[in-house]
Length: 376
Image (spheres, rainbow, N blue to C red):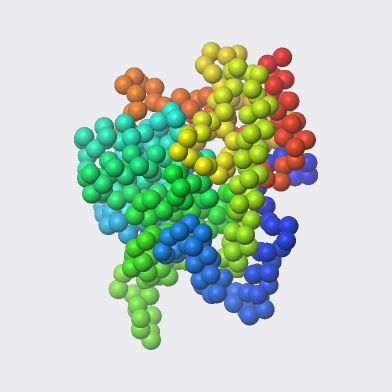
C-alpha cells in the first residue's frame, strides 16, 4: 500500500485524541458494548449537531434500519428512497418487508428531486421517505419537507456522507423525524465502523436503544417481549469517535481545499465539470466528484484506469438503485419527462476523485496532471 493515493482513508488526529479515550477504556477494563465512551459520544455528537438525543450503533445501516422500524414501517408498506445512493440506504426497507419506490435526483445537487417526489406522491402515499445527502451536500430539505409534511409522512435523513454539512444554517441530519450518520472507514470522520441515529424524539431514541440491545426487558432473568438486534456500539469504537469529533472541522476544511484545488486545476478543460454546489449548502465536501460533458473523447473509465495504473484510487458515481439487478423491479419516478433519468446520467458521466485528507498538494497535483494529460 506504500505510495498509494486513496479515495478517502481513515485519518486519526495528530494529537492522539482517539488513543486517550481508548486507553481510558482499557485502564478501566470497559472493553464491551456500552460504557462511558458510548454515552459521551452520543451526547457530544448530539450537542455538535444541535439535536436532543442520539443512539450510537454498530453501523449506519443499523441506524437506518431502526429508523425505518421506529416510524412504524411494516410488511407491505411503501417507502420512498433516493435512487442515487449506496444500497445501504434501501436495504433496511427490505429488512422490514416493505416496498421501496425510488426517486430520481435533481441536477443542481444530485440529491432527491422534489419534482420527482411530487410525481411519486401523486400515485402513492408512503409510510416514510428516506432522503440521502450525497457526497457531503444536503438535499433541498425545505422543498422535500414541505411536500412530505403536506401528507403527514415522516422523513428519515440519510446523512451518512454529510456530517458537518450545513443547510440554511442548520446541521444536516437534523431535519427529518430521524437522521443517521455513518463512521465507516471512508467517511469524513471514522470509528472504523459504526453509526449514529439522532432525533428530537427522546422517547423514540430510548426505544431504539432497547431494540439495539436485543430488546432485553427489565427483569432479573433474560426476558424478551419484542424482537431485538445486536446493534449497539462498543466502548472502544465510541472512544475513537469522541477523538474524531475534535478534528471534524479540520477535516471539512481540508476536504474543501481539495475540492477547490481540483476546481482550479481543471478550469481549462472544458469537458470536465465539478459536482455542483448549491447556494443553500455549506457542504463538508466529503468526496470531490466530476462529470464529463457528453460527446467528448473520453469516458469515466478512461480516467479511472489511467489513475489506477499510477496506484491512485478513484471510483464511479453510485449506480442508481433503480438500475441495480436486485432493486430494478421496483418503481422509479423520473425528474425529467424523457427516458434518461438525472441519476443515470450522473452515473454514466461521473467519477469520484481521490479526496483523502492525508493527501499532499503534490499528490493531488499528480492526479490533476494525469487526468489533464488524457486530453493532450
